[in-house]
Length: 570
Ligand code: ARG
Image (cartoon, rainbow, N blue to C red; front, top):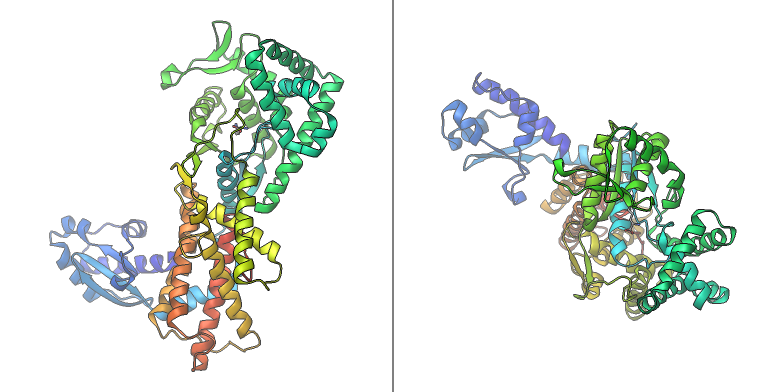
């Protein structure tokens, strides 16, 4: 609808000039005034006349009426003055020329306006902590992060996806002690990450009874920090095992990272920033620790060094941001984490600003709410957590049961079960406003007739099925719109770019999941009320087949924006 609105706004400007020379609006003002009526039978866009009432000293309904009599536009089929609004209807020719043809021409680029071309966006997301479980709390950062990356890429940004692995810290001291005390090479080789997590959990249980274990762990970490050969070897091994396993989950989601530079990478990048902080006088000693006082900004101090001189989470993030600015010269650097870390980001962003880095305002924190499953919150450390891979595995298994029951002869059953199972989890999660806490209910996620991933994928497969039936037909007659379902469908498709822009502006992938549902409902209404391949009139049939193809194109692009795979058959 973007271009439609723009054309109408220009025509509206000429019309208003004709009505009165006192009206000093610009095209942008008018664009900002347009609204979408609650129901498309009331019009495709509405122009409220309340603001004009003061300037023209007339009642809004009278103004609306006057405009309705004078307004002319080649893209508008009719206008109606209702209660102080001017309701504006788009022509079918516009829908064909500017929506259907445009989708057919631009294909998978349709919906992108290229506004990111020439800009660089960095995404810091997923970033699990090695040896700690990759649990459902990471679902948010992983799928929101990747969706935001895909959205930016779609708009033409040069994107860098970074997995800032938690691959350094005292947990490795604990893990080494646990491995030496209760573990074995064989068990770790066979058990992988699960065994590492079990060792880590065991360490915490035992350390509660035996405080000395903590000292041993600190010693092992100190040895690691000073590059003790054996500890470095063990550390690398632990990281490798974990990474291999994470990559299985990423593969299911279709995620690839451009960089796995984790926390360990920044160890030698910190001293320069600490030095800069010290020289600038920003850093103060407080009870032995080094801090940056942020009381002026209503925040607790940002901790830079502990009393023993060791670095902290913010120290590393500051060094990493400086490194990334130099390495990528980003226009935006986006961090996706749980809302629990919001203060951390606000604090160190402020420190970066105080340090005089003029790109501080290009750092963006995107927080999200908590996840519980069937009402249960997660508890880390105790080992009582739901792993992301298990959540996906359960969904995949349930989908394969459904397929076994309903469509046992489906080709590529395994692939489809994975796409639909994983897609259902992702879609259900991303359907919510990211900041809201969500309670995950598997049955709801897997339902084929709610606003769900399976419903969307089913609709996509339905398009593919229709197109398969129509293959071989020559559909290149002049398109005609003969029903409101067809027109409504094109109107929904015309809003794709707006959805993309809103999703980026708000850092909110749920705009896309909701848009997908709008497209699916509109398509299914069309499908149920209109004959497609069997339509009697040839040009009607051809138009409908092309419409189906346009829906397939837009849905396919939109799925890609939210890490959901598409499947041609279910
Ligand atoms: N590894 C951290 C965690 O699991 C998340 C890292 C987020 N990114 C960052 N640059 N701090 O909590």
